[in-house]
Length: 129
Image (cartoon, rainbow, N blue to C red):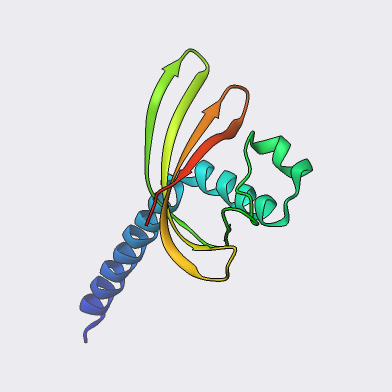
């Protein structure tokens, strides 16, 4: 390779890396606030930590009745209502739900998040199998 063609190849590779990094950052940031809130929600629910939950939620995913979630993927988030500073958003999650009997099933969980001064989990529905 000549000096000029290797410089062009390095420049092209650098641009490709920057574009990929920007795409990954955008994908992670798309549901950033929801991701962090739901991670805290699932962790506190798993431990039945009502003190932690009261800061972020009005509901609990009761481990002994509904099961636990250790990992999840947000597949959609839709604003249902926006009135002044109040926002209500529905977030759809796919997660392996470990049931109280020990089985694990892939489930869709629909969350309702509400924002006044901060985001709170105000409801959810675990879709039937």
